[in-house]
Length: 321
Image (cartoon, rainbow, N blue to C red):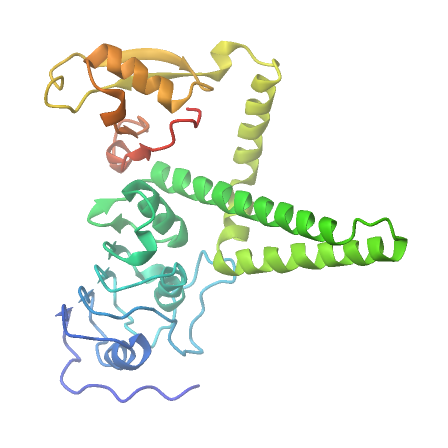
């Protein structure tokens, strides 16, 4: 096995360590040395350090499964760690979150992860959903519990997002290769087809490398997502009635001027755009459409952690319910 970093003396019985704002810059060298020095540490706080990137420790004992869903990570590094705080540490790529799973596997249960460049283009709901999908054993994110339904929704949303990325990459590769080999010459057409296939494969490989859990999550949710797509396609083609494509919604206003108004309960078509729902809210609660922000939370089973699922922002006015 690779040699372990030289341990720091005197930390063998430490259970909580707060290293906020200590100018730590190297995960492998600095955090790696701590990792072999704290066998019973359960809580590690690294907020406000310019780490920039997290990499999996060099450990032959890292036995996370290839499907990205199991294993306990490298057992020689922070073997007891369950809680980690990474607020404002400069993480700019999702590969750092994937590295957490590789490093800690199913041991990591709670993560605080805010104010990092990788999530800045996303809404809070999107950032949370993506983080949940990439860390299969996480139970708390930013102090909010993760219920079974929220995990399922997050993973399916993640699969759909990556699938769209793959489709767009293949379409772009086909368009590029098609333009290069469109002068009618047979040999050039064959070369163009080969180039198109190579470009598609290269683009697909690059995307899959950025999403190591995609294959496992696709297999996990394939049947449910296939059934949902078939139902949606049938409704769009006129194969289903409006009642089969409708959803029951309860809309509550959180605005100061109308928070005391009774909730609005409607049965709406699933094809209704979010923008149209805002118009409905404008009429019911007297709110300016341009100032509205809608958030969605499913009812779950009405009990347990799913009843407190983190709401998802509906930030695309053209998207259907």
